[in-house]
Every structure is written in structure tokens, then in C-alpha cells.
Image (cartoon, rainbow, N blue to C red; front, top):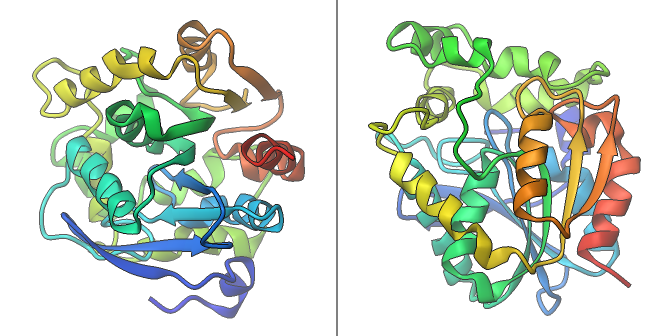
Length: 291
């Protein structure tokens, strides 16, 4: 996929390729190789473009930053199979092992939360600081009606994959301040065709809301493992106008991690780093890379 000059100007990085268990994974590896690494994980329907400003800020502070595009998302390959939560946890863990990272700090957003925490609870001794932005890593019965519609068999996939009814609206619904044209183009760039959007639809279908769901056990394992991370330094950086990961999920993290610091933005939506800009990225980088 060839980025347009406008998107390239916002995303001036050199993606690398890794053959993950599920397929070809594109990832960023920016900053000095000898520095302590920060792993940043996006959700659905975004990609590593989501983290671009935080990546730049962390690199200026001398940190190494690893940012994968989940297989099927962003600039990664499009698999021919349905990937579940366990597959995605396995892919990220394989990347860490390939890079020889024995320790790392972590930043997560949206579906990247349960993936990132899924990796972390399986290797808690390797994890340092954790930045949490509008996400979840535990079971909940709450789901916005518009997302529930996208989970409907056949109809949901037709809407999400066929008519771009998830990635397209997200570019507007996930923010309270309209995205600049080039930024909007960047978020939507990897999801222009039916084939490009398969994993967007798969991610939605893989939200485990029922006990019989194939990913329910994996989510339960992540939730049960969260106490192993309770002593980790954590920053909850949250947009309070999120239509999806609202105060209910913020309070879920507060209950499980009572010592976590908070950076709250009352007028920011789901893409908190877009709405809050440097008011979020600078302190987030300061948390992950303390002087």
C-alpha cells in the first residue's frame, strides 16, 4: 500500500515486516535500539497511524518505540482466515520474542487493550509502565447499540465490510473535533475495499458478549490475570465523551487499579489523542519516559 504524500507527511516512518503466526505483520521500530522499548497497540478500526504523534514525542525523549499493525489491519497482510483474540495475543507475543525484548512499557487503545493486557498478564515480570487510553480488558455487558448492530450475522458483515459502516463512521464518531482532511485520509487509507475491511468486520464479530462466544474464555483469562499487574505504574488517559468506552469502563480500571494516575479530558472522544492533541501526548510521553 502506497501512502499519499499528505498521509506520508503525518506518518514519516519506515515500517518493517515480520512474519507473525497469523500472517505478515507491518510494524514500526523507531528510536535507538539500545533504549528501553515502548510497545503501543491500536484497536479497531485504526492502525499504527493512531500513535504517530506519541511515537514522535517518545523518540525525541530517547525511547525505542514498537508499534505493530495487527494482522489484517493497517499496512499488514490480509489473512485468509478469521483471527480470534488468542491469535492476536500470540502474534504480538511472537513479535516481542523475535525482537528479543525481555522488558517493555505498554500503551493500549480500544481492542488493543485486551490484546496488550493479554500479552502482559502472560509475562508480567517483563512489563513496566502502562498507558491506558479508552479501552477495556475485562468482560462487560455494555455495548453501544450501533456496534451491536454491526455484530448481527450477515447484515453486520455486509454493513461493515461491504459498505464501510464501521471504519468510515469512526472517523467522525470517534472524535469531537472534526479531523483534518489528511488525518481522516490517514485513518481510512488501509480500509478502502471489501477485502481490506475483512479484519475490521472480524474484529467486531470477535467481541465476546456471550459465554458461548469463541473468545469468551480468552477474555476471561485476561481479566483473571489483571491482579498480576496491579503494582505497575499506570496512567488512565481518557476521553470522557467516548460513545463506546465511556465512564463505565474508566471506573472498571479504577476499581482494578486504584493507584493508577489519571489524565481526563472532558471534551475528548474515543480517539483521545486526536481530540486532546499535545495536551495528551506530551504528558503521556512523560509518563512512559520519565526524566
